[in-house]
Length: 87
Image 1 (spheres, one colour):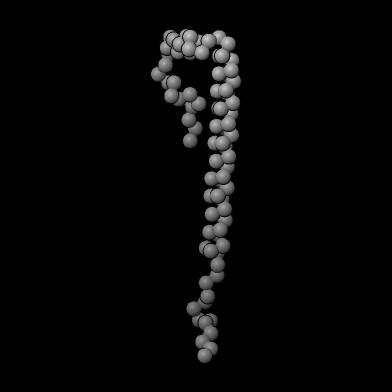
Image 2 (cartoon, one colour; image 1 turned 90 degrees about the vertical axis):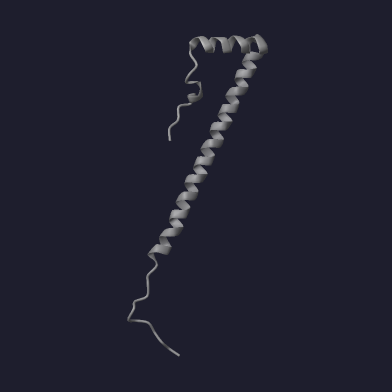
């Protein structure tokens, strides 16, 4: 499952992005923009790290389940003619 990073911006063109940038600039000001960008970058990094940890945990759990199922399938069955009937 390979999803493009900015798939939700697919319908925005260049002119729309310029308007969004101008509105953000007006709302936050030129001094706050670097701080805002830094915060967004850190948030994206934390999200990526959490996603990778989650994927690793899911993969590890799936491998563990497969490994636990193999011995059950490979257990030898008793032969039909060699059962002991001691009473």
